[in-house]
Length: 178
Image (cartoon, rainbow, N blue to C red; front, side, top):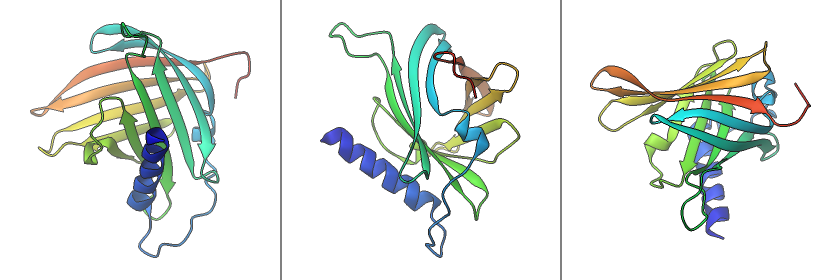
C-alpha cells in the first residue's frame, strides 16, 4: 500500500511539475528516444567507486505519458533486501520543450533534489537535479545507436568542481533489439 501511495505521489508530482499553465491535457507522448529505453536491461559499472550490477525494467504508464523505470541492485543486504532500489518517472513537457524526471529511491526524502529537467540533445538526456545550496547533480543518459545500448553517467557539482560519481552501461536483456 505504501509503495502504491509513493507511486501515486510521484506521478502527481511529475504531472504538477510538468503541467502547463493552461492545464490542457498533452497528447500521448510519442518519443523515439524514450522508446529505445523501454524493456529489460542489465546495468553494469561503478557507483561511488564500487563495481555494481543492477536490473532495470522500463515501461510506459499513465496512458503513455511517462516512462517508468524500476531499478534493483543484484547486490543484497544481509537480510536479503537489495542494496539499492529506485522507481523513476520520465515525462515530456511540450510548452517548455524539456524532459522531466522524478527519481525515488530507497534513500527516501522526496524533495526538489528528486526532480530533474533536461533538454533533448540528440541521443542524450542530461538531467540536472538542483540542490538547495545551488550545487547540482547531472545524470546523463546517452543512447548508442551502434550498440543499441545506453551509457549513464552521474556527475556531482561540489563547490564548482564536477566529479564523477557513477559510470554505467545498460545492455538489453534477451535478443530483442530496438
